[in-house]
Length: 314
Ligand code: PMV
Image (cartoon, rainbow, N blue to C red):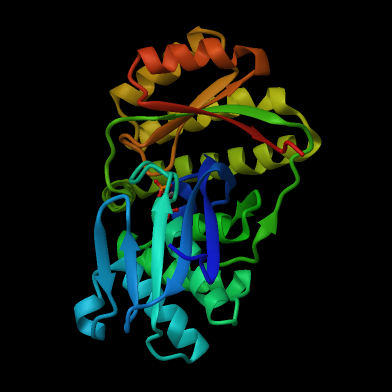
């Protein structure tokens, strides 16, 4: 194939602290995960606009609004074109991704962001991060119902963020490298389901669940200070406590609890589930030299993939 006219990329993400409570107004911390990413390449079209997924052997055309409404790839493309005031272009957009789907790594938001970047660049009108973020948030709403906006924000800006719903985004500085193992699990539950279960629990027990949200919010605040002060050691106990609170919100499960427990028993500094929960992924805080050994522990006990991620590495 000829050289692409334009390219667009976007990486994955993980939530360090505050998931679920963030939907209810508490702060959360998320970081980009650039070792996995979605890539979109744009080529001249064959008379119309298409999004092609070569790895899956699928393609989607630019349908009439009502017909295309379920397909996030076409919806994203349509929103980008609307924003730029452009008609259907004669382009073919080829999309690949190494981000595991439905695993809490923000795969959907990353794919939308990569499309937005590639398509707007191909038309010579690259979107700003703010414009892209607004579009990706709209697409996220379609997939997740009531997203807090944390996924699209960390992915579009590709920086560690301290996020409070509806407030100005705050970027955070990681003062000392943080070594994490991110273990992807073979099972997952749609974020929409766990978010709605937590909402139901909150409606049923507002005082008790409200207190859990507050405690999670306090952990995010403390964790921000520790991250910015380079106090990595303090983060382990905060992760463990955040995990216990998520368990009380019913969004952890036996597999996640067991993996966190085994990692801690094997010497990890801290461990918690990350993202929507009941599957997806867990994150484990380690010392650099524990990487090989602890990865093996996770892989032997049910993780399907383990990434080593160094946050704040220059
Ligand atoms: O999409 P996930 O699995 O990374 O979870 C998103 C985080 C939640 O707080 C559970 C939902 C949200 O919209 O913030």
